[in-house]
Length: 241
Image (cartoon, rainbow, N blue to C red; front, side, top):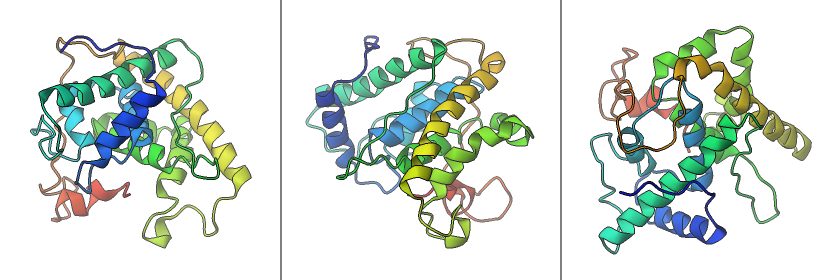
């Protein structure tokens, strides 16, 4: 596949990509470009680059070995290539926003009232942290910088099906949500800087090799935490839809 361009997706491109995603009949698939944006942000910010062949299946909710979204009713090979090209173009448009040293602006979808909630974005970011989980532990354990993850956790768990895991008992009001989204953008920028020495290189899409990522636990495999449950029913459901 030729190297995808690095300019942002057009509005028509975004709509076309969302239409393709809507045809993926898999409960684990990412629901929209907002979630993918959060997912990509975590991979770009993270300690080590992850090969696109490893993370692409996560988008359509497949296991890492499933390199082609066979469950999606594409019209043909050209549409498959179009789907992958749009994803990689969005990835390449995000990388310069981090590397230019400016505050990263997440792609957020507004509801019918023009309000951006950020929940899908935060869930996507947490899914991205699922790659190289052990390498992210340094940030979790950092008493000062670990707080950078708080806005992401709050938005990811805001509507958790288990009320005890929700960050607030009352709904998040407009002012607090606006503050959370502002802090989220600033915190993600700082997370990118936090892992800069670990990465040591830009992570734009290239056809060559990248540093191998740690193997991602399959959803149907035993959870590595030792609970005896399947990963998808244990730690793998840490950021549910």
